Image (tube, rainbow over all chains, first blue to last red; front, side, top):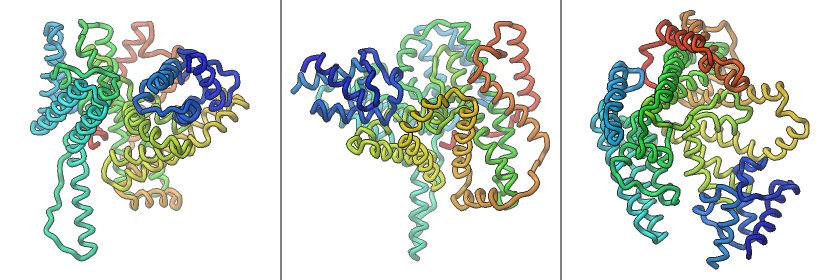
Length: 82
Length: 478
């Protein structure tokens, strides 16, 4: 899966979790930039990412996700190791 | 040695002078010696425990960094966390467990000659243990490389402004500062001294004065009516804030005088409009520590349960937070109440936020005021359980508040008058900092005369109405 495909799929997940169809992802985006991005929605995001991308994330991955860009890179790294 | 002791008044200026006379390259060593001297002055033998936690953390973090095998890294991290948690667990809970066993055996008519052991809790053990655990986990999570210099690790864990009661700092913030100590910065020193002054005001004028009244009422619950108990229960959160918030500001100011930046521990908590916001403003360093090292791993573990996974993680985190306060049922119930309140907010958050947005409520003064009041009522009600010596006593307090009325207990009138003056000043400062940050400046005024008058009045108030025999800070017991 390439970066564009990951971004497209991730955008769908974000829009579903945050119930906002106008959300546009950027690499620099953080929890501070999205209304309602709190601990609960963060974990919902993680479970949706694991289900939709059919990957398993580790706690260490979670600790490295500071921005949406980090999130995309971690998802891509999972496909590289598969 | 505590911040309000006469010894600290001698120790701190002497340390500052020696520190700034030491060549910049060796200043960290001065800080290390000063920190161990400070801790040894409290109880010499406990410094061995501090050194043991340091040595164990140093060895294991170096080992974690030296291996690339994930399973081995994890095992090393877990061993060190268990090793350094053991003394905390032993000193904090052994007496309680021993007593519980004795009571249980007596209840089933088994009489054993087990001694009723009472251990003295090494001061600051919770705080420096949490800092050491945080550092170990951060090295394991590759957030930070392990420090090669044992002295730097020792300084991080024993740094005297923080060792007794925090703020619970992170290695990522402190180690780079210790490794690159900067030359004296006049503005930072002055800022630190100003913070210390305000911290002493909070502690000596507000907290210890309020404490006299609250102790008089809560010390004899059965002799006071509901009016007095309600009044004391309303005042208690303010006493805690002035006590621990004051301590934290003195600690941050002390570090600032030495050129070290430390995280904020309280951010005007009584202006929070929800419990979740309250816990982002109260004892920030502990809550952020619990979030990173307890709540996040738990919520990740339970993520397949989605919303309920968050609820389980919240309940366990605050149960542990209650247990951290001490092995008493009151603290556990207190923790569970916080967990329940936060879970309710988490479950209703989305709908509430949508409703608030639709009606533009977050910009309406009455709605903000109502949120502040409800949050305060919920917190102060839960603090009745925290302040009471037993669940039974907490029940009696609530019962008497509801069932009995009468004249308010005044005690010594000056106690309430002086408390009122101090508390009004504290809350007014917080109010202006919260809602009018650049309009009403006294301490940060651009006019030197206004600044001098503001700080002089604080010094005069401390000398005139400060309580100088108020004893220890509330949080030292934890």
